[in-house]
Length: 377
Ligand code: ZN
Image (cartoon, rainbow, N blue to C red; front, side, top):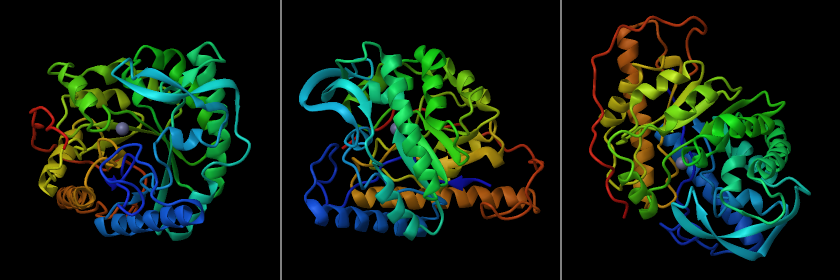
């Protein structure tokens, strides 16, 4: 009950890449880079262990960027033909490579990384991949002529990759789809179809992460333009609830997302973002517990997973470590509280009796703070 996990990236050590920067170039190369990435991932597994994070990941230590890390293993992309493109419905501009022919995946992209992680991880292991729609919003197209067609082509490659990751012992495969929040109308029409293609044949847990982005200035400016109540999720959560995806990861901490949107995900496990990644201020365990407790009004405790709002790559490393500890401690606090209300309930995730929804007495309302997200550094 109330397992813990993270949405995505973690800061890279300063000896591996320049800290507090997205797309930072590697500071090592060749065999030294591979060894450095493995060492960085190992460090974060250990820190997640100590923080009480149950479903762990490498925090993207093996890739420079959550989308392009996978694309670097795909052929049909011209990396010398860089195109300036408006990203996430023109929220910001980026220089992106261009698809110039049919995309293929000549060999596994992340298998070596997953093998290394599985050898060392002592708990459940999650691996993240970019979602098909988000890939198409982060790369220019000079071949397919339509986003749904290009997204489906990438979904096939993602599926082959995901099947291999599952065979290597990965417990949860998550597809990152921040583009869902920018192209809401496309999610029910073709976004979910592409996700289904990507998870075809998988028996491990599958997740989709949708957020309001990293705590970078362009996202903070965009959030300020969205008004007091953010209703983007409402447009497509019914389609996700009807989908075959097991888990949905969403932003809740210091957010203007009305918690009632979670009512639409009644058949899903919900990864509730209880850590704000857009501020260096570290949450107290009590604040984390309050965010999670408020979500319990709409999500049964067995379906609730404590998570971060998004990735923490741009944050200073000590801040990210402290936020992981706050997440673990906050979830533990709530587990103890629930166990106190229902003494038969397990206090550790995965422990105790399974099956049958335990009766949880109603909890006192604990409204979320509604102040705007703090500025990123
Ligand atoms: Zn995110």
